[in-house]
Length: 208
Image 1 (cartoon, helix red, strand yellow):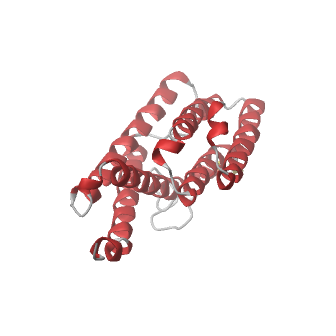
Image 2: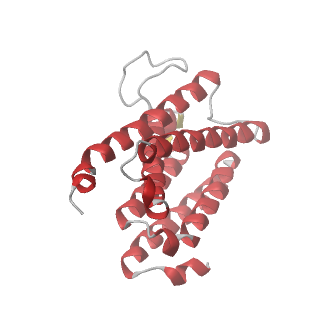
Image 3: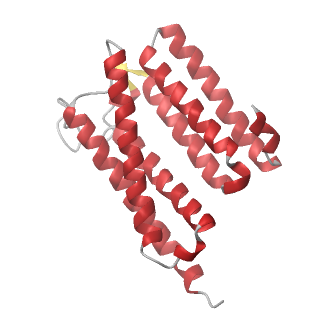
């Protein structure tokens, strides 16, 4: 891809790591006939392309690129690693509620949703600060990334719905699962903005 020519030295490890696990999991999904997650691979390739093409205009921090790559790995592992007759996404990490039914808390899936859309809110905050610096030191700079991340979380649920319509057997879940996904998307986005509000405060209050 042409965006590899735009990479700086400290960005190459992220790109190589990401390309490596995408290739491995794509091969794994195809071998197992997991057509649901082939849809997710295509979606991820689109997102990788968007990030790659905007590398120099956005100047994402390397830590952010690693966080995004980790999200992708967690996502693919969630759908590709078999656990107890299902996949890692269905694994209950912390037994807050009973292990049967769709109201299971706390699952791997929910943790990944919170983490992923927390990173998304962080990315949107970065873009807002870079391209619209006049909005910094305003509530908009914190509320907009959180709300926009929740909106992108809804897009993710639409993609999952498309997978349900196009693939006979999926691990997407039903209405309660979708509702919980949206809740954890929002939780992750709000936590990310709360962390930024706390840690970025000294920089914003520093004298010019």
